[in-house]
Length: 450
Ligand code: PLP
Image (tube, rainbow, N blue to C red):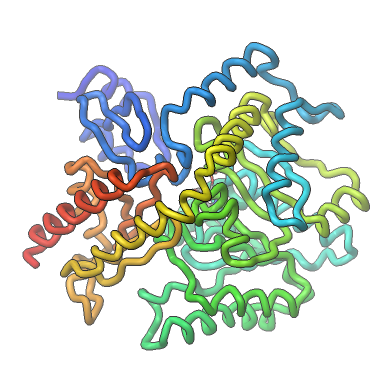
């Protein structure tokens, strides 16, 4: 018997990325409160949030300072737009703070309401850039299979998710996709190093096939998040950098997941020594407490778009929303002043990754990998042949359901189970996460009689 709220939800709420029919049959779980790295549902169950919400609650739940910042800002100035030759103190202060943390060559920030809007913004910035440079033919974007860049039309097209492209006749024209650096799934007998070079070279092959004079930008996540925490082999980024340096193409780095500490640096651009022209941010920017995203713009692009171009006919009602900006600024200041990202780098991520590797010994784990505060395991029936538990990646869903029953959120991406916990997770909580993951794997193996 479903509760009144569940019934109301079924009747009126059309939910994102959900099978709404199955959801209605089962009734959604109602999440009621959260603290630290845990959240609770209306039945009183407690869960360790291995996904930091949706890769976003970097600072953990329940930070009163963020609530106070929102309330104070709402009392003082709940809203004003940035279109009328105006700004607000939080929007300006936040832009300056982000610029101070970003790579040195990036000093301007354009605000949006989400990561998707930010990638749509990138799309328009790139095309405007090349128009202003007198090269309007440089319209095409190169992205990667299995990338996730958001859900709006341009962002979903930039993404490489087949199941999204199937709905709505995507991608839109002018977006092509190359191979992903997924060694476990597609390594084909090559060493990771060899495969990293090969995957990167598919970029050069595509540039040569289409013609440098038609390519506007290459977009990529530093590691593919929703694609299954695909961390490129060590040879991949240096080879991509070599190729990008050779051709006149803009580089968009999508740091929506990786930004604000997930890799143990403020940005993964610093971790991988990358020099993007445009950088997408959202999620950890406010630790998910309020919706806000943005594009960090390099001096090179700003020079053309702002100094030479001037007008840019693009923006959102909620660009730089003062309440969201104030909360984001408070969030960043806490990450900074409490040394949370330094702690990730020095202590918690080495500990998490060390313990995560223990899962590699499990009979149904083909690979355990991770970086900073993200990690993944590949579910297999056979470690040698890499045969999956079940066709159509159903094993991931089975594993997720066992995990939830054990009070742990792990997310299935096909046959890959991933975690991305709050950055503030401590050793005791990491131990709990690993123990719950082990029990979950045992139950999944038993389910498949392995
Ligand atoms: N880019 C990446 C890498 C993401 O992971 C996401 C969301 O998961 C987005 C963009 C889209 O962000 P949003 O959901 O805020 O629109």
